[in-house]
Image 1 (cartoon, rainbow, N blue to C red):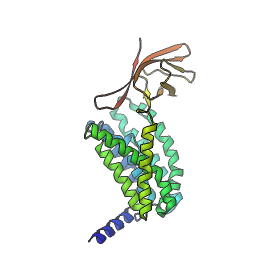
Image 2: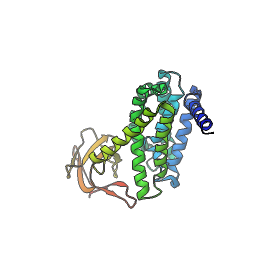
Image 3: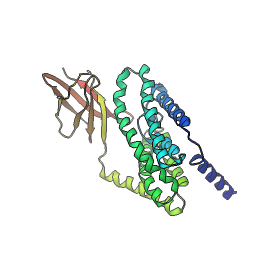
Image 4: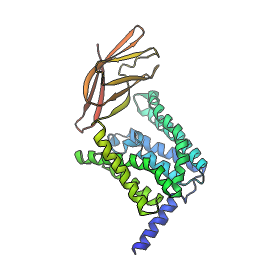
Length: 297
């Protein structure tokens, strides 16, 4: 009974990861469907601050889609082309669907720059990633960075869930399930599976002792929407906090990097114009890191 059940699961996994035909129409439909689903999670208020909203912010769901797509391609080049087109369609559509519902309107596309850069990387990554289908030691080597990222997300999400249950419990289980699934599908012996579990977990534990307690690296619009030119410069009162201008023009954005919670001030000089702000980096009642930028008179 146990062997029969294991055989069924293996056959099902091989069918889902290598036995399906991903034609170009299927890839396009898949891209549109995932974009619609992500937009719903980002727009509908009930999903705010949940694991589902993370689909439009973090990588775990897109890793799942990309691996599924790569595994059902016949060649590395097909994998690279179809994965690239999948992201090229899905990512801007997510922002397009949100425009009518957002106070930022078309300004939302200022955030697309980040995802467009990753979209470009999907071509070489999916070309190399296709070789996980070989199920050998080289496949495991390719898979290890993905397993590390998922293990890290799962670990931090479980920790968040224990502190503020049930926040991020779905993300925690989803990431862990992906780790176990990929080891089941793309490795063939016990040593590969064991290394695929231990190495990422060991790396996460090491990083927990090396990394600072917080690591904030995000982009924000300035609250008074100044139109900045490429001559603009930034000066921050607290030298440990980095504030850099990420984009110019009507959709001017800044990038904030910090390794501590604090309140400080920064000033942007752009020719004769000066803009002063108070920057607060803090945790809310649920333990989430927040950034607040307030213009100074």
